[in-house]
Length: 613
Image (cartoon, rainbow, N blue to C red):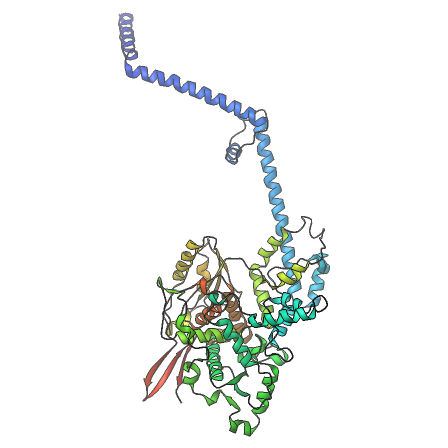
């Protein structure tokens, strides 16, 4: 009975299976199954062929190598070929890491060698060279460092009038090339040379100006030449030569920006009254870094505003009563605060500020005109003249700052042009004429393009609207959108929180001076006192000069410091680079009626109130 029922069940199942097998859906499934088997077969065959080709020398792609390195070796590569490729790749990668490590070690050695040469101590340099078994001739020139000794000598030649000449021997050729042509008396016919130099001097302009007239504020080259001639009379002992002797502002809380703004006003008075401006005590140079006669003088940092002969003459006249009575010499106390800070701008050159190019942007719009355009133009000219040439001390400061920021990067670049066996193998090639003469005028290397950014916060909130660092970076992103190869920022700020926030932008490379910054909201005077006079003067000037040389600049027009940086850039061939400001300017002064008399509120780097006399 059970067997009969079982057979009946089998017949039913078989019939059911036959019915299902004859159905269309089942047929599709069967066909799909066999197709899958076929595709799998052909893929396996292709992989075997590909492996055979690889064994004959066809290289795997990077992706294939990555896959092979992750697969097990039990099924693929039993003949050893894939495993061999992986091992070769690992060997190459290991070799590359060794080479990179060796390059880093050589770059560090070269960086350290430059550091030893840059160090003023001859004993330390000699000790380093003896330890590393290097010689001075085996160390290649550092592209980011200047020869301060040579540059100072050249600049002195260009800043001193030659015999029986109104101004120095400025030629159309700059730097060593101009000097070379002037001194080629043995190779050039004297008459031809004289005609060439005479023609050159007619079109020559001060060598501290970069670019054409269109690259600078209007009449910059002409004004700078006239300022030099005015400040360097041919005969300082001439009774017709009159002087204005002025100390730099030294009231507590006055920043360098305020001091520069005040001296710009005194230079304007000197021009208007046909006097030679002679600066005297500069409190920020009253430190051990400024040695000898340069201590407490502007000439510690930049070339003096007038000749040594005129300085000596002015100081002698100050000791004579008749000189005071005749008005041959005056001092700062002879003028009111209003005359110094908001006095009449020289009209010797007309009104060139009336056609300034609109290249400053605020809130997405170009600043075309404002009621202090004349002061903006004049302060730019005055600061450019006062900072026309760096002293050796300032040149050394800039070398140290660039080396600290860019030295290792420069070392890696230089190594690419050296023999791989350096320092064991040295290429001793004499310097060619084009290197010695023509290329000598090129400025020291910095990573370009580079953006300079001055972020002023802290106690500045009492004078202007303080803008967050994020807004500065928003403007930086706008610049990079137009110039995508920009990724370097020279960051100038007194606030540690700004330095900390910069680390939140990994797509930017930040450079900044290594100095203690303030934490919390304290006055600038308190902060500078904590640094000491030398550091609190040196590092702002380094930042100022770096900003003037950068390709782009972001700042706040509400800051006098940014205002002066903008002026240096606009007289340094960078008008068309533009200037992005995070806030509006404050027009630099306001009148207030206090206690029944007018007072002028000077908006400098710190708050200061001056009372009209």
